[in-house]
Image (cartoon, rainbow, N blue to C red; front, side, top):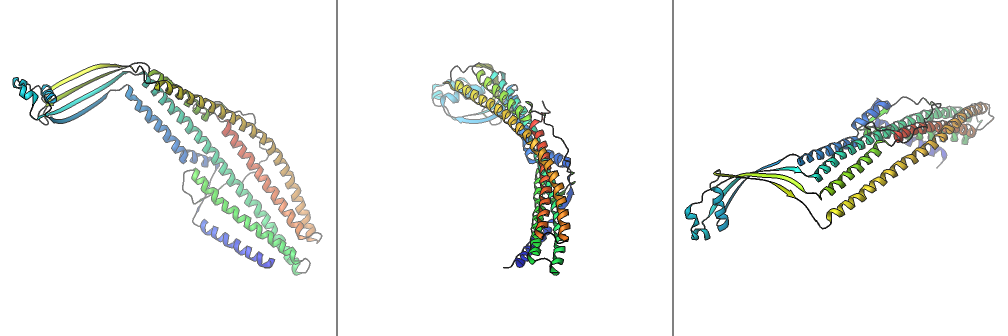
Length: 447
């Protein structure tokens, strides 16, 4: 297969690929999106944030369940029974207040007839002193604060991820601009080379070299436009909306003079650190709750019941009320071992917190070291772009005079494009580093 045939097939495939993209894009909607709009929508509508909010609500509901340690428990029941058991039959009649002289007949006492009983009973229990439950309730309250800080950290993470995706979209648009400029230059060179070829001034290999580069740039440009769709779908997912939207943004200003604040430090009041601290405090309260089970509990109880031999009858009534003092003196060392296990788990949380804080400082130091590299890279890319631009201008002039070959022009054009893309990538890295620094050094607003 000749080079000419290969190039034609490449172009046909590229055109087909672009038509497929355009067909898919025809069903999409374009929308201009600012970074602030994307972050606001993501923080409010992201699924992870919604799940974190549900965790807070669940913890709040579980805390409200602990109100039972102060409030009475009341129950109402209605029971119907029948027996010929001597003891139960006599007891039924006693509860019904229907004992007669004849009921003491030994024959009836030993062999009673079928005796029914219908009981309506109202019961209540009133907790008075349960220290273990009180500390458990305090632990449940700490769980609410824990999940609130987790929710806040989730929002911070979604904010960072959204800004990262938005910057990637910005970089892709900037890359498209660079590649379109390179493609325009290559097409201009192709027109010029084709005229030279028709005049017999250049070889066919020179024309094919230009056509290969044009085809390569068209293919790369098509992939970059497809990447716009992919990133847009990801941003839509972050914002909690359906896909099919193509986001357009303001072009990158390429402000290379913007400085980065390297004085920031990892705050001990970062929301994920505070969440770990609340988990440790909750563990301490659970341990104390388990210790309080060694102490006695004091509770009140009572009931009122109505007994009758007829269904839906409410003949005789009686009540019972009292106070219960209970004390678990020894439970086979179960409580002791549970306290020991909970203490180990609490110590594990403390070590995890220390590790998390150390990791945060390590990441911060690593990011600060990257800042110097990014600054130097931006300066070098600016210089390289100036040199590559001038080199391309000179080579194009020389090419038009027949002093250099086509490969030299294509190489100079490629170098200029690569340097522009490198600068765009460096600016993206700088902006992403800024966002990551904010994520590492943010301080909880709930502190």
